Every structure is written in C-alpha cells, then in structure tokens.
Image 1 (cartoon, rainbow, N blue to C red):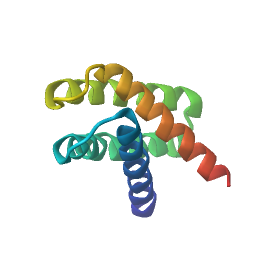
Image 2 (cartoon, helix red, strand yellow):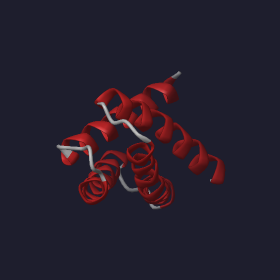
Image 3 (tube, helix red, strand yellow):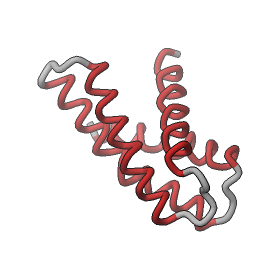
Length: 110
C-alpha cells in the first residue's frame, strides 16, 4: 500500500506542478504551495478510495467523485488562503485535479 501511495503522490506532484507552470504560476513560493497542497490531499484521497472500494466494496465511480470533490474543495481553500498569484483558485483546483486524475487514468491503462 505504501508503494501505491508514494507512486500516486509522485505522479500527482509532477502532473500538478506541470499544470501550475502551464497555468502561469511562477516562483518558488507558488510552486511550493501547489506541492504542499497535494501532499495534504493526495494520500488521504488514495487511502480512502482504496479502503472504500477495495475493502468495503463501495462503487468506485461514486467514491471517486465524492473524494475528488472533497479534494478540490480543500485545495481551493488552501490556494485561496496561501497563493498570491492565483486569481481563480477554485477553477485552478478543479482543472488541476481533472488534469492529474485524467492523465493518471491514461497512464494506468498503458
């Protein structure tokens, strides 16, 4: 399970930092905020998803939507409070998560 958590976090960090750069975020502070926000949200989401779907047998789509929505809400609040450059933190959180989730799904299919 630790390898799943570490792999998911590493991939998410790479993808969301790339997304932040494409979005136009610059500077050590802003990119550190993006990294720390993902360190805060990714492990609990992955752990809860594996627990709910793998152990309890809950429907994967419902669990994923719920947990990703919660992650977007938490990230939005963090970006709103901590970022000096983000003008639309909710949109950024939503699109960054959609990008990293979608890219992760494609990578897992390969």
